[in-house]
Length: 371
Image (cartoon, rainbow, N blue to C red; front, side):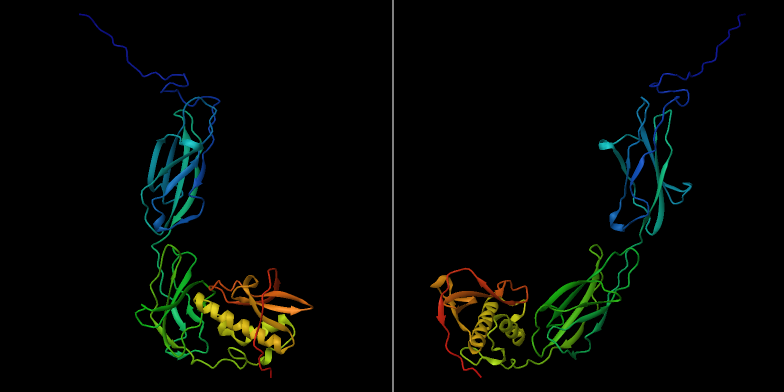
């Protein structure tokens, strides 16, 4: 009878650095902790920004073994309640590595960390905290004034709302206003947005509304990502149309109270006397008509103040300049530009007295009756 002895088999650990099995950490090898890039410490994510991507700056190793990464996300700073974990992530390009995690529950804080590992040596963890905001809540603003069909004092009334209630998931707000002549808002006559004020936010139309009319208005708030509901509609009535301010009428007339021999004073006076002719938001045809009206009033006021003013022919021979006049003084004829960007109807018309280059075209203006 023979006794047979079997030698026990045991896996051997290698000391070769690139061997799959290494007997413990390799002496002298150091791996730095990866730097956490996104999410940054304390960052708050909106619901719309999920799913979230974790991004690190790659670690640095002085060893010869390839490095991979471990990512973890938890609801506690001790990482006992993990909601995501992944290891063996190979390094990404451009010195950065990233993973995209599953969608997280809303309205709570999360902690995340990452470390580098070469199978024998590992870095320390780098940790950070971020938050996923709750579902956004944004209420309609409260319409404060004008309300209940009150008669407003101006055809450009200031609309006022109390700021909207919102939760932490809503960012900086702006308010959209609409004014219409019908309750269904199919005939919007003015609209625009205003950045949120302190407690209340206001808006005024950029052009006169129609006189003696009921107008409907509403408002809502938004942060560019979340838009709240429209507030309930309110109404107001615009003032009755008033007669033009006393002064020279169209065509040859008197010089009015703006008569002067100072061009700057004339344009200031005429502009103040006819604010309706300076309005923004009109058609180009209306702006041209307004400019011609103001030009003639300036010529009349200058003539009555002792200046030798006349219509100016474009390029010396053409039709009358809409926003310029001719001024004869000291034996010379100058061209005076009156309108500041008058053809930009989105802006309030500006008047000026500015001598410009160009061939003058003096065309006598009918002598007004100066009183």
